[in-house]
Length: 515
Image 1 (cartoon, rainbow, N blue to C red):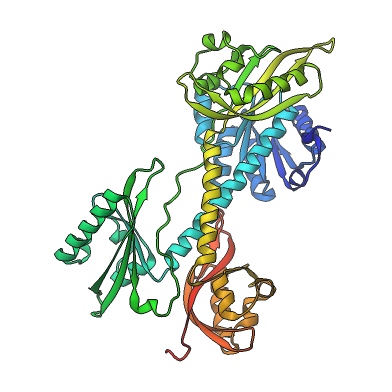
Image 2 (cartoon, rainbow, N blue to C red; image 1 turned 90 degrees about the vertical axis):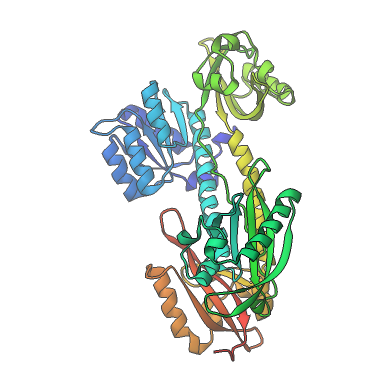
């Protein structure tokens, strides 16, 4: 049985809204999706109804016909749905002119399926769209975690561009200078009150970092607005863009007086992500049964860098990376003999300018009345950015997990019911629990009785949206029945729809006798 005809768990979990004003077409699509195990939650025939039902039904994905009844077409409806609900949309249309395509691009669709709709290609498009949307959501959540760690640090974390102007500053630095982040960004050290001598010393150290592309560390003292002299350890690291070029310096300034209460803190600022997953227009290629191109759309021309006339004189082997030619020839042979109805492969293409790009290919043959294979239809999606992004996400997830596990402060998270859902080794070691024991508990289970009322009150304010974060000294019960006092920063983590997903704890143990 073809793997796309197997009803899997993802299919059953995916809710789809069909927006189509041709009743017969809508029913055919619904029946196809139901056969593949998808949950079709509704069918509507206008843009207004699509917007209304998107809010009521909260589907995971929308199949949107471009031409619809009513005052607004599918593109306008998709834009409104994206703004209000962030639901991925796959367009369906028999054709699009240049003006329509330009409007379509502005809505950042998750796919495009030509009419008449092929069930197999539709399923491939849905799976790809759901997968990409899931990754987009995880990326947003990861970015929120990174910002929380950035702002929860008790160190001053900031960065400079090549002109010496500050480009980022965490909450700790803002509080120390009694300035907002907006007031700090764009300023130089001198403009923020550093002495001329200190600025010269910093410029010298930064110059060394630029020239050697390496980490530098130095110690200094500085008088804050509170009038007290603080001793600092400053660590400087070069910041690189995606091409490896140095674009600035990150600096972590650690107050050594507070370091006595900390075992280890974050010591570098993570490089921010580049914008990921730009949606590419799908290339459509008509060919014969031997892999020769008969026709193609402009998207494929742009993707390969060849004109249609040039492509018509070529076989697919000529613009396919040698590593994939034999495998695709075997798939074409299986198609020709009816062993498979279509094939899917991710492969590398060689453009006219010799640049190698990744593409996701879905292909199939038409069948004549006598049962013989005729011309092929090939769908090519440019996934070059996706391939790069997948590796970046893997690398980032690994780095973020390492920070969480190796952090010298207590880090933990609870769900909206107050049950622990994550905890780092530092917190476990401080309280004496195993991870398995800890994750069975509610955060109030180990809260000192005298702290429960205050903790519950603040937690309720977080969940109600009255506050976004708070700081608190509170006591937790260790496994052996003792109590340890921590200074905590607590903040909510929200999804793209501004719904609270979890609450994060970050803090360090302190002497409970300190007022």
